[in-house]
Length: 341
Image 1 (cartoon, one colour):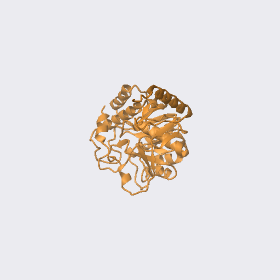
Image 2 (cartoon, one colour):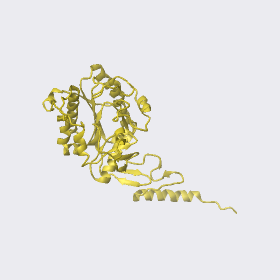
Image 3 (cartoon, helix red, strand yellow):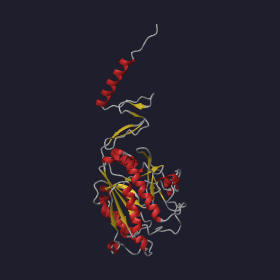
Image 4 (tube, helix red, strand yellow):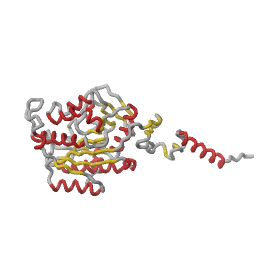
Protein backbone atom coordinates (compact mmCIF):
# COMPACT_ATOMS: atom_id res chain seq x y z
CA UNK A 1 0.00 0.00 0.00
CA UNK A 2 1.28 3.49 -0.87
CA UNK A 3 2.21 5.71 2.10
CA UNK A 4 0.49 9.11 2.19
CA UNK A 5 2.63 11.86 3.70
CA UNK A 6 1.02 14.22 6.15
CA UNK A 7 2.00 17.49 4.41
CA UNK A 8 -0.21 19.53 6.73
CA UNK A 9 1.79 18.41 9.77
CA UNK A 10 5.09 19.19 8.00
CA UNK A 11 3.78 22.66 7.04
CA UNK A 12 2.83 23.46 10.64
CA UNK A 13 6.23 22.30 11.94
CA UNK A 14 7.96 24.39 9.25
CA UNK A 15 6.02 27.53 10.22
CA UNK A 16 6.83 27.05 13.91
CA UNK A 17 10.50 26.49 13.06
CA UNK A 18 10.61 29.65 10.93
CA UNK A 19 9.05 31.73 13.73
CA UNK A 20 11.55 30.32 16.22
CA UNK A 21 14.47 31.16 13.93
CA UNK A 22 13.19 34.72 13.52
CA UNK A 23 13.01 35.21 17.28
CA UNK A 24 16.52 33.82 17.74
CA UNK A 25 17.87 36.06 14.97
CA UNK A 26 18.74 33.27 12.53
CA UNK A 27 17.95 33.13 8.82
CA UNK A 28 16.96 30.00 6.87
CA UNK A 29 18.01 29.50 3.26
CA UNK A 30 15.93 27.17 1.10
CA UNK A 31 18.44 26.41 -1.66
CA UNK A 32 15.88 24.27 -3.50
CA UNK A 33 13.39 27.11 -3.95
CA UNK A 34 16.06 29.84 -3.85
CA UNK A 35 14.20 31.53 -1.00
CA UNK A 36 14.80 32.81 2.53
CA UNK A 37 11.60 31.85 4.41
CA UNK A 38 12.49 33.89 7.50
CA UNK A 39 12.56 37.06 5.36
CA UNK A 40 9.80 36.08 2.93
CA UNK A 41 12.21 36.95 0.10
CA UNK A 42 13.98 35.29 -2.78
CA UNK A 43 17.77 35.04 -2.60
CA UNK A 44 18.01 37.42 -5.56
CA UNK A 45 15.98 40.14 -3.76
CA UNK A 46 17.49 43.04 -1.82
CA UNK A 47 18.04 41.39 1.56
CA UNK A 48 19.67 44.27 3.46
CA UNK A 49 17.82 46.64 5.76
CA UNK A 50 19.12 50.21 5.90
CA UNK A 51 20.50 51.09 9.32
CA UNK A 52 20.13 47.52 10.59
CA UNK A 53 22.01 44.91 8.57
CA UNK A 54 23.85 44.19 5.34
CA UNK A 55 23.28 40.71 3.89
CA UNK A 56 25.32 39.35 1.02
CA UNK A 57 25.15 35.67 0.20
CA UNK A 58 27.05 33.48 0.77
CA UNK A 59 29.03 35.71 3.16
CA UNK A 60 26.13 36.26 5.52
CA UNK A 61 25.08 39.23 7.63
CA UNK A 62 26.92 42.28 8.90
CA UNK A 63 25.25 44.23 11.68
CA UNK A 64 25.21 47.95 10.93
CA UNK A 65 26.90 49.97 13.66
CA UNK A 66 27.53 53.07 11.49
CA UNK A 67 24.00 54.14 10.55
CA UNK A 68 23.44 56.85 7.94
CA UNK A 69 21.12 59.53 9.32
CA UNK A 70 21.08 62.08 6.51
CA UNK A 71 22.50 62.91 3.11
CA UNK A 72 23.11 66.33 1.58
CA UNK A 73 23.59 66.24 -2.19
CA UNK A 74 25.45 69.41 -3.17
CA UNK A 75 25.52 69.99 -6.93
CA UNK A 76 27.90 72.59 -8.32
CA UNK A 77 26.47 74.05 -11.55
CA UNK A 78 27.80 76.42 -14.18
CA UNK A 79 25.88 76.12 -17.44
CA UNK A 80 27.70 79.09 -19.00
CA UNK A 81 31.06 77.24 -19.22
CA UNK A 82 31.24 74.32 -21.66
CA UNK A 83 34.54 72.81 -20.43
CA UNK A 84 36.66 74.02 -17.52
CA UNK A 85 40.15 73.23 -18.80
CA UNK A 86 39.70 71.74 -22.29
CA UNK A 87 38.59 73.01 -25.71
CA UNK A 88 37.39 69.60 -26.92
CA UNK A 89 33.68 68.79 -27.18
CA UNK A 90 31.98 66.55 -24.66
CA UNK A 91 30.58 63.11 -25.39
CA UNK A 92 27.23 63.52 -27.25
CA UNK A 93 28.26 67.10 -28.18
CA UNK A 94 25.34 68.91 -26.51
CA UNK A 95 25.03 72.31 -24.85
CA UNK A 96 26.27 72.38 -21.24
CA UNK A 97 22.74 72.81 -19.82
CA UNK A 98 21.81 69.38 -21.24
CA UNK A 99 24.48 67.67 -19.12
CA UNK A 100 23.42 69.62 -16.04
CA UNK A 101 19.75 68.68 -16.47
CA UNK A 102 20.50 65.00 -17.01
CA UNK A 103 22.85 64.98 -14.01
CA UNK A 104 20.11 66.33 -11.75
CA UNK A 105 17.47 64.06 -13.27
CA UNK A 106 19.65 60.99 -12.73
CA UNK A 107 20.24 61.87 -9.08
CA UNK A 108 16.56 62.49 -8.37
CA UNK A 109 15.64 59.27 -10.16
CA UNK A 110 18.21 57.34 -8.13
CA UNK A 111 16.95 58.72 -4.81
CA UNK A 112 13.36 57.74 -5.66
CA UNK A 113 14.31 54.19 -6.66
CA UNK A 114 14.43 52.56 -3.21
CA UNK A 115 11.72 53.22 -0.61
CA UNK A 116 14.24 52.54 2.18
CA UNK A 117 16.03 55.79 1.28
CA UNK A 118 12.92 57.65 2.42
CA UNK A 119 13.93 56.72 5.98
CA UNK A 120 16.87 59.12 5.88
CA UNK A 121 16.79 62.88 5.45
CA UNK A 122 17.99 63.67 1.91
CA UNK A 123 18.47 67.32 0.94
CA UNK A 124 19.43 68.81 -2.42
CA UNK A 125 21.46 72.01 -2.76
CA UNK A 126 22.44 73.74 -5.99
CA UNK A 127 25.40 76.11 -5.89
CA UNK A 128 25.24 77.92 -9.21
CA UNK A 129 27.63 80.28 -10.94
CA UNK A 130 26.51 82.53 -13.74
CA UNK A 131 23.74 80.37 -15.25
CA UNK A 132 21.07 82.15 -17.27
CA UNK A 133 17.61 82.56 -15.75
CA UNK A 134 16.11 80.23 -18.35
CA UNK A 135 18.60 77.52 -17.35
CA UNK A 136 17.76 77.96 -13.68
CA UNK A 137 14.08 77.67 -14.56
CA UNK A 138 14.73 74.37 -16.34
CA UNK A 139 16.54 73.11 -13.24
CA UNK A 140 13.60 74.13 -11.06
CA UNK A 141 11.15 72.34 -13.35
CA UNK A 142 13.03 69.05 -12.91
CA UNK A 143 12.74 69.28 -9.13
CA UNK A 144 9.04 70.10 -9.49
CA UNK A 145 8.51 67.06 -11.70
CA UNK A 146 9.93 64.87 -8.90
CA UNK A 147 8.01 66.81 -6.24
CA UNK A 148 11.31 67.44 -4.45
CA UNK A 149 12.44 70.58 -2.64
CA UNK A 150 15.89 72.06 -3.10
CA UNK A 151 17.79 75.18 -2.16
CA UNK A 152 19.60 77.41 -4.64
CA UNK A 153 22.71 79.42 -3.78
CA UNK A 154 23.92 81.95 -6.33
CA UNK A 155 27.69 81.91 -6.00
CA UNK A 156 29.40 85.20 -5.21
CA UNK A 157 32.91 84.71 -6.59
CA UNK A 158 34.08 88.12 -5.33
CA UNK A 159 33.54 86.88 -1.79
CA UNK A 160 36.35 84.33 -2.28
CA UNK A 161 38.78 86.07 -4.64
CA UNK A 162 40.97 87.47 -1.87
CA UNK A 163 41.35 83.96 -0.45
CA UNK A 164 42.53 82.45 -3.75
CA UNK A 165 46.17 82.69 -4.80
CA UNK A 166 46.15 84.17 -8.35
CA UNK A 167 49.29 82.15 -9.25
CA UNK A 168 49.01 78.38 -9.34
CA UNK A 169 51.52 75.72 -8.30
CA UNK A 170 53.01 75.64 -11.81
CA UNK A 171 53.68 79.37 -11.65
CA UNK A 172 50.93 80.28 -14.11
CA UNK A 173 48.07 82.71 -13.66
CA UNK A 174 44.84 81.08 -12.47
CA UNK A 175 42.12 81.42 -15.12
CA UNK A 176 38.82 83.10 -14.29
CA UNK A 177 36.97 79.82 -14.93
CA UNK A 178 39.22 77.95 -12.53
CA UNK A 179 38.88 80.70 -9.94
CA UNK A 180 35.08 80.46 -10.06
CA UNK A 181 35.38 76.67 -9.80
CA UNK A 182 37.55 77.00 -6.69
CA UNK A 183 35.08 79.47 -5.20
CA UNK A 184 32.23 77.06 -5.87
CA UNK A 185 34.06 74.22 -4.12
CA UNK A 186 34.82 76.57 -1.23
CA UNK A 187 31.13 77.42 -0.89
CA UNK A 188 30.15 73.74 -1.04
CA UNK A 189 32.56 72.95 1.82
CA UNK A 190 31.02 75.74 3.89
CA UNK A 191 27.59 74.21 3.21
CA UNK A 192 28.94 70.79 4.19
CA UNK A 193 29.65 72.09 7.70
CA UNK A 194 25.87 72.59 8.09
CA UNK A 195 25.17 68.95 7.24
CA UNK A 196 24.00 66.37 9.73
CA UNK A 197 25.84 63.34 8.36
CA UNK A 198 26.90 62.43 4.81
CA UNK A 199 27.62 64.85 1.97
CA UNK A 200 27.76 64.01 -1.71
CA UNK A 201 29.67 66.66 -3.67
CA UNK A 202 28.69 66.46 -7.34
CA UNK A 203 29.82 68.29 -10.46
CA UNK A 204 27.12 68.98 -13.04
CA UNK A 205 28.43 66.60 -15.70
CA UNK A 206 28.05 63.25 -13.93
CA UNK A 207 25.09 61.13 -15.02
CA UNK A 208 24.22 58.39 -12.55
CA UNK A 209 22.80 54.90 -12.82
CA UNK A 210 19.41 54.24 -11.22
CA UNK A 211 21.00 52.29 -8.38
CA UNK A 212 23.85 54.73 -7.67
CA UNK A 213 22.64 56.53 -4.52
CA UNK A 214 21.19 53.31 -3.13
CA UNK A 215 24.49 51.47 -3.66
CA UNK A 216 26.57 54.27 -2.14
CA UNK A 217 24.44 54.62 1.02
CA UNK A 218 24.17 50.89 1.70
CA UNK A 219 27.87 50.38 0.93
CA UNK A 220 28.88 53.24 3.20
CA UNK A 221 27.00 51.65 6.10
CA UNK A 222 28.39 48.19 5.35
CA UNK A 223 32.08 49.03 4.98
CA UNK A 224 32.19 51.79 7.63
CA UNK A 225 30.61 49.32 10.08
CA UNK A 226 33.09 46.59 9.16
CA UNK A 227 36.11 48.86 9.54
CA UNK A 228 34.72 51.05 12.34
CA UNK A 229 35.85 54.23 10.58
CA UNK A 230 34.60 56.94 8.23
CA UNK A 231 35.36 56.45 4.54
CA UNK A 232 35.22 58.25 1.17
CA UNK A 233 33.32 56.99 -1.88
CA UNK A 234 33.90 58.02 -5.48
CA UNK A 235 31.01 56.92 -7.78
CA UNK A 236 33.07 56.68 -10.98
CA UNK A 237 35.36 54.01 -12.34
CA UNK A 238 37.71 56.35 -14.20
CA UNK A 239 39.78 55.15 -17.20
CA UNK A 240 42.99 56.52 -15.65
CA UNK A 241 42.69 53.93 -12.87
CA UNK A 242 43.69 51.31 -15.45
CA UNK A 243 46.69 53.25 -16.78
CA UNK A 244 48.89 52.07 -13.92
CA UNK A 245 49.35 48.54 -12.61
CA UNK A 246 48.68 49.48 -8.99
CA UNK A 247 48.04 46.83 -6.37
CA UNK A 248 44.57 47.43 -4.95
CA UNK A 249 42.32 46.24 -2.16
CA UNK A 250 38.92 44.83 -3.23
CA UNK A 251 35.92 45.20 -0.94
CA UNK A 252 32.39 43.85 -1.24
CA UNK A 253 29.74 46.55 -1.21
CA UNK A 254 25.96 46.31 -1.35
CA UNK A 255 25.59 45.03 -4.93
CA UNK A 256 28.97 46.06 -6.41
CA UNK A 257 32.62 45.35 -5.89
CA UNK A 258 34.60 48.38 -4.71
CA UNK A 259 38.33 48.93 -4.83
CA UNK A 260 40.70 51.15 -2.91
CA UNK A 261 41.87 54.12 -4.98
CA UNK A 262 44.49 56.78 -4.31
CA UNK A 263 43.13 59.47 -6.65
CA UNK A 264 39.73 60.99 -7.47
CA UNK A 265 38.31 64.13 -9.01
CA UNK A 266 36.01 66.46 -7.05
CA UNK A 267 32.85 64.35 -7.17
CA UNK A 268 32.83 62.20 -4.04
CA UNK A 269 30.79 61.19 -0.98
CA UNK A 270 31.98 61.34 2.60
CA UNK A 271 30.86 62.37 6.07
CA UNK A 272 30.77 65.72 7.85
CA UNK A 273 33.16 64.18 10.37
CA UNK A 274 35.71 63.59 7.62
CA UNK A 275 35.31 67.12 6.23
CA UNK A 276 35.89 68.59 9.68
CA UNK A 277 38.85 66.30 10.34
CA UNK A 278 40.62 67.42 7.14
CA UNK A 279 39.14 70.89 6.84
CA UNK A 280 42.47 72.63 6.21
CA UNK A 281 43.38 70.11 3.50
CA UNK A 282 40.08 70.52 1.67
CA UNK A 283 40.17 74.30 1.96
CA UNK A 284 43.76 74.43 0.67
CA UNK A 285 42.45 73.02 -2.61
CA UNK A 286 40.27 76.14 -2.90
CA UNK A 287 42.98 78.62 -1.95
CA UNK A 288 45.67 77.50 -4.37
CA UNK A 289 45.48 75.62 -7.66
CA UNK A 290 47.64 72.56 -7.14
CA UNK A 291 49.19 70.25 -9.72
CA UNK A 292 47.17 68.12 -9.99
CA UNK A 293 44.22 70.18 -8.80
CA UNK A 294 43.01 67.44 -6.40
CA UNK A 295 46.46 66.94 -4.81
CA UNK A 296 45.31 67.79 -1.22
CA UNK A 297 42.56 65.17 -1.50
CA UNK A 298 45.05 62.57 -2.71
CA UNK A 299 47.13 63.28 0.38
CA UNK A 300 44.06 62.53 2.51
CA UNK A 301 43.70 59.17 0.75
CA UNK A 302 47.16 58.22 1.99
CA UNK A 303 45.62 58.12 5.49
CA UNK A 304 41.95 57.35 4.84
CA UNK A 305 40.16 54.72 2.77
CA UNK A 306 38.75 55.95 -0.53
CA UNK A 307 36.95 53.46 -2.79
CA UNK A 308 35.38 53.45 -6.25
CA UNK A 309 32.94 50.91 -7.75
CA UNK A 310 33.43 48.21 -10.37
CA UNK A 311 31.49 48.65 -12.62
CA UNK A 312 30.97 52.40 -12.49
CA UNK A 313 27.88 54.00 -10.96
CA UNK A 314 28.26 57.33 -12.78
CA UNK A 315 29.78 58.61 -16.00
CA UNK A 316 31.87 61.77 -16.17
CA UNK A 317 30.82 63.30 -19.48
CA UNK A 318 34.04 64.79 -20.78
CA UNK A 319 35.53 64.13 -24.22
CA UNK A 320 35.39 60.43 -25.17
CA UNK A 321 39.22 60.22 -25.29
CA UNK A 322 39.73 61.77 -21.86
CA UNK A 323 41.34 59.56 -19.22
CA UNK A 324 39.00 61.27 -16.73
CA UNK A 325 35.85 60.41 -18.67
CA UNK A 326 34.11 57.37 -20.13
CA UNK A 327 34.19 54.42 -17.73
CA UNK A 328 34.91 51.03 -19.32
CA UNK A 329 32.52 48.12 -19.96
CA UNK A 330 29.28 50.04 -19.30
CA UNK A 331 26.44 50.96 -21.71
CA UNK A 332 26.50 54.69 -21.04
CA UNK A 333 24.39 55.51 -24.12
CA UNK A 334 21.55 53.74 -22.33
CA UNK A 335 22.15 55.80 -19.17
CA UNK A 336 22.26 59.00 -21.23
CA UNK A 337 18.97 58.16 -22.99
CA UNK A 338 17.22 57.14 -19.77
CA UNK A 339 17.81 60.60 -18.30
CA UNK A 340 16.50 62.69 -21.16
CA UNK A 341 14.51 65.62 -19.75
